[in-house]
Length: 492
Ligand code: NAD
Image 1 (cartoon, protein in one colour):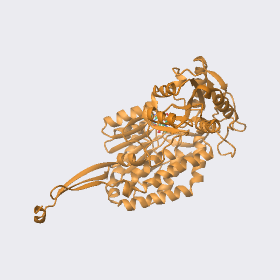
Image 2: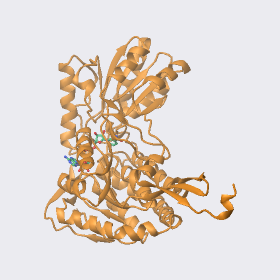
Image 3: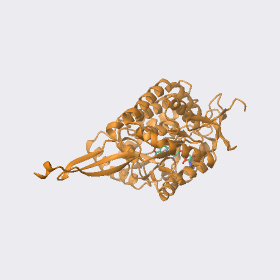
Image 4: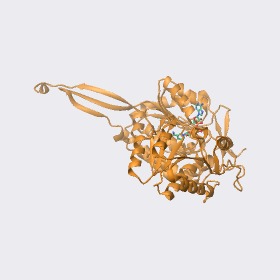
C-alpha cells in the first residue's frame, strides 16, 4: 500500500493534502489493483476552495480577455506536449484503449482551442440612436465562481468541456472530478499549475456526493455544470436551481441506430461496432440498440455478430487491444445481470461475452462484447442504460416504425441512421427526437464549436456544453442605455 499515490486537492494555487481522513480507492480496471487513494474532501475543504475562488474573481475578471486567452494558448501547448503521458493515465484509471484515450484528449484540446476565440465569442451587440442621441449596448460579463461535476468515462475531455470557457470568459472555476478516475484531473491541474494563473482562479476538489452537496448549496457558486447519470443529473438540476444557480446537467442515454437495407453494410458494421463496443460501451454516445428495417436484418445481424466475436479485448496499453475492461466489478456484474434479464424477456444470445478472461489480467473487470437478438422494444433491456458492451437488435419493417421506436424512448442523447437515401436521411433528421443526430455516423459527438445537444432525460437545463452555449452559460448580459446628447444632435 505504501507505493499507492495519495491524491491531493489544488486549492488557492497550491497542492494540499486533504485532512478529511476519508479516502476512496482508485482501481485500474484492467488489473483490479489499487493504484491511488482519493480523498473525499470535507465540507470545510470545499468551502475553502469556494472562498479562494471568490477572492480571486474580482482580479481575474479585470484581466483583459486578450491576456486571459494567452493562458489558454499556453495550456493547449502543454496538453499537446503531455498528451501521451495523460493518455496512459486515462487508460490506467479508466480502462479504455490508448488510442481511445488519445482521441479523448484531442476532443478536449479542441475546446481549449475554441476558448482562445473568446475575444470574439463574448462580444456584445449595440445599436446607435435608439432615440436621438441615445445608444444601447449589450455586454457580457462573467458570473463569478462556477463549478463542474464530472463522470468517470471521459476523465480528461469532460472537464475540458467546461474549464476553458469558464476561465477565458473571466470566471473562477472549481472541478469536482469522478472519484473513480481522479488522476487525469490531477495531471491536468499539474499543467494548469505551470501557467502561473493567479491563485484561486482554478481549484480541484476531490470527493463524492457530500462534496457535491456543498457546491450545490453554497451561495457563492453561480453556475453548476454536471455530466453523469440521469438520476444524479435530475438531483443536481433540482437542487442547484432551487438554490438560485444556473445549471446545465447532462444525463444518461440509450442510443439507437437504424440500419436501412440500402446502407453500405461493411461501413455500417464497422462504424456501429466501434460505437457499440468502443470504450467498452461506456460512452454516453454509444449505440446500444440497432433497429434493422426490412431486409437489412440478416446481413447486419450476421456482420455485427462477427465483428463482436472477433474484437480483441485486453489491457488498453497493449498495442493490439481493441476494447478494454468496464470500470468496476459492479459494472461488469450489472452488464451480465442485464444479459439474464434480456433472456428472461425473450432475447436470444448471438455472441456471449460472459465468463471470459484476459490472460495475465485475471483480476480485471472483463465483459466481452455481447450481441442479443429479439429484443422486445418494451422490455427493460431496451429501455435501460446498461453502460457496457451489450448490444441489442430489434427488427421492424418500415423506417416510420423505427423512428417511432426512437421517439418513444425516455432518453434523447443521440440517434443514428445508416442509409444511402437522401429522402430517408432527411425524414430522420427532421423527425427523430434526439439532440445529436448521426447520419452514416456512429458517434455523433459535436465538435467543440457546436453545442452538445442532449434532449429529454439526457439533459436538464437550457444551455448545453461547448460552443456558443458555453459562452452564454458562463456570462450574464448587461444592457446599457446611454444618452450623450449635444446641441448639434438636436438639429436633426
Ligand atoms: P454518476 O452520475 O455516478 O457520477 C457523476 C458525478 O456525480 C461524479 O463526480 C460523482 O461523484 C457525482 N455523484 C454521484 N452520485 C451523486 C449524488 N447522489 N449526488 C451528487 N453527486 C453525485 O455517473 P458516472 O457513473 O460517473 O458516469 C456515467 C454516466 O454518465 C452514464 O449515465 C453516462 O451516460 C453519463 N454521461 C453522460 C454524458 C452526456 O454528455 N450526456 C457524457 C458522459 C457520461
